[in-house]
Image (tube, rainbow, N blue to C red):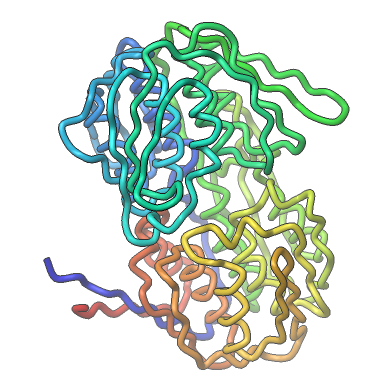
Length: 450
């Protein structure tokens, strides 16, 4: 099959205007599919993100015995097999580019007495899986792989899984979720201890499906526990817009003169809203309105107006867990602010689809911005009212957030920015270009054979 490579050219734009709705939250979409597959009965998901990453999870749970029926875009039903009901798949499960699919599914199958092999694309096969393999081994599962703890990985699930208590060595919602999912099929109570709060979509959704989840917040840490062998009951899940995807039009509106946009029905989970808090602290003109709760998730509308007097600041390391995916686009906003923006405690960015610290550093330097980086810190010295040079070509390194971030920077640059290898955008935000076009962004896209 001939590979088609997509290239984006983003040029300076006049004011972005309009009202948009962002596709469904990727984190919640993954979890809705996996937990729906562990019920007895039929779960309906409304607002499911229609992306390559989420499709990888849907295909995986079908291979494990569940049935997924896409009624129409964004709406599907899942017929589950119950906790402990996964069957051994006929073939290797391919997670594509999705680290969430791989890590959560490793957890979900590790306490089932079946053999499963997981793999992924070239990018995912470079990403470490040891952080989930280590705790999941404690349940009694065994893992084998060709090199380190990276995909492809063979899993032999335990037929007598024992509950565990595990303290996360580094904050990670994916590792926490993998352990809780494995604990569903272990006799007794499984507990995850975290010193720093991470996104809690899994805990909220487990409760919605009827699992007994206990959250004990102490002064220095939190304990999140789940009791094994629950009978999960089907529910209807309404997936809000993804705050991580919303960060791109939000940032673009802050940077492009004359902009004023509204984004409807966005999830603003308090453990995911660090980007909004940071922009407001920088002086961004952002209003969060019409707050409401749905299945435990906080949802709101967001209005953004061009913000010409942004100021650099120091983003505390303790905020990283609340906005780890938003540092690439924050770096673009920081390039237009007055003075340095110092981002600390972001080592995790080196283990994403690309080494994002390196990708941001090189791309911004090519765009004429002064940037310095260390192992876990990035400093962007903003240009303030001076125009950003642009006029460069950016290698997206098969990383969707790098591709979309530099697209947004191009909308506020003196000369157009070209982003090569933008195919990866389809993994999380398939209609990104169309949505940006709808609010007036000057973006062209070309396709060529590899």
